[in-house]
Picture 1 (cartoon, helix red, strand yellow):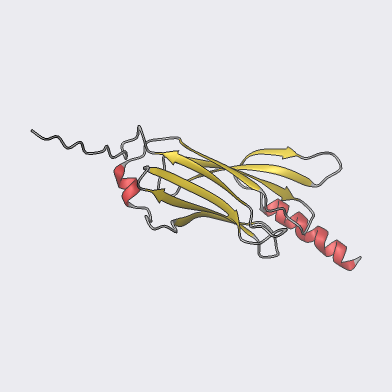
Picture 2 (cartoon, rainbow, N blue to C red):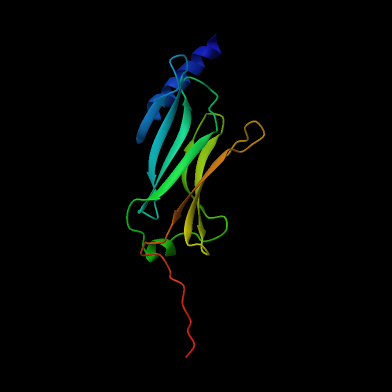
Length: 158
């Protein structure tokens, strides 16, 4: 009983302090303490990209599901200077990170640049294995039609 009260208190504190820039919150039903939370996050190095991330928030519960969804879109101008500032390695770079539970689970979003297709790839993933799988989701933002697009050089022979 002592641990149940402690869990209730910790869950309440997390839910109170975890209220951030939620765009949407949908209850999964009257008889559950779980909600679908939708956050909007701007890419800190590419201000013309916004990612919407949906995840399950398990209020008053130590378990927090790892499932998430992500959709990233161009919401402003993207310039060549923006692309020049990002990590272009195969691993890309973490652009968002959020703790999902007190049990060392985190949601991360990593940006990877696909130079050949001139596309930004956003990969969201859980840092903890759940049911034999690391949950993940992917979204892409093509640079076509932006100031960052590099048109192919056409070589003509005289």
